Length: 277
Length: 205
Image (cartoon, rainbow over all chains, first blue to last red; front, side, top):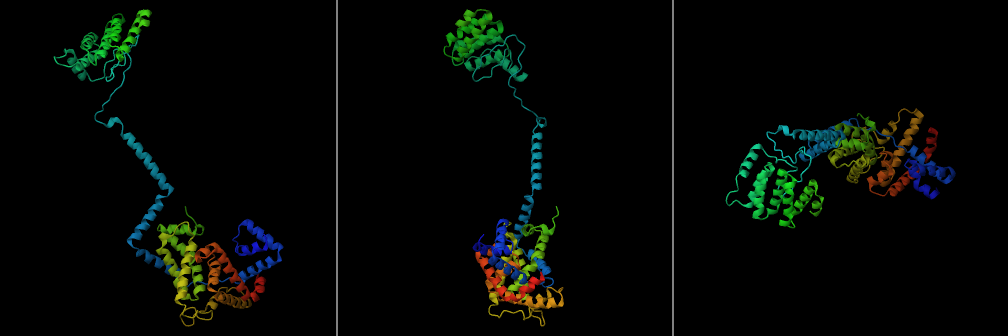
């Protein structure tokens, strides 16, 4: 530190406002510079001699200030009082303890919501079950599915519906399609029979639908063959499966029937037929 | 958690007061009313005016408490108010002659002078030292009184209010270097006025 720099910081040195490093540098400079030492000591002596004594304030000044403060608070307009109240509440709201309590309350509250959501508290519950366990069977039969209809997942899988509903459906399906009933309802009636494992009746109705033609014909032919297979086995159904792709070329039911025919021939020990299919 | 009053900063006390804690305001008054009064007294040279200003300073604090920001320094805010009130008082009294150390500080007949108050401040010293102290302190008070307003203001804010130079710059609205320059001139003037007592001051150490 040089004298010029010392002159700039001498007051900070006198009042201890210098940082540690600069203060040490200034003190080192004072030790080695007579000019700056004289300046520093002169200022220090002046400060010591010229220190002003503290004069006691008039008695009761502190109390008068506090009393005036009380009066002012009482006269505060409503707006400022509300502002202060908000400030006080905000001060409490920002406290971490309160934040933790709010979080705990939230966690407990949300838990109660989930507990109340159990089905036991409700009067009735509608359950839709998808899929059922497989029956004991040596072989699994792949049941072709209609695009818009629910098909049984495995051989002999009954549809899930109440007994009452199923009885009504069977009654409707057992009756021959009425005069003028369209092919759609005939196909659905056949499907009800199929799902109820009444395969002979289902096959007859599916064949009738397939004979009439239309959008459901290919699927009906496939289900007719499937009904035959479920009723009398592959030896009887293989030929029926074989006929579907020739009658309904380039259809999904046709491809499915080809696959089923091959599977039947395979199970009958006729791999050549299977390969041809 | 209980915190000793002395450990709590002015700013924390002020925030507590903003939230309605009147004890915090009481602590601030206890801590600052004396230096504020002394600052006003040295500026105005009248106990009546100084008391009036000291009281008004704290009332302004109450009225504007909601405007105080925690990031600001309370003492800077407090002395900005005190300084402005003193400036107003001095302007109003500009047409009147300033009282001196030999004039009564109050309106009552036989009231003490500022010199008496200074002399009473250290009653514990011996008679001889008391005499010298009385003379010296009277000269100090006169020397401070004789300082130009700008230099006296800076000197009092540093010595009485104990504000750092940076805060004094904020209170007075001038650059910190200007504040230091004024302080240096003030000390040089005091040194010239007190030169005969420097040796005595060294002897007292």
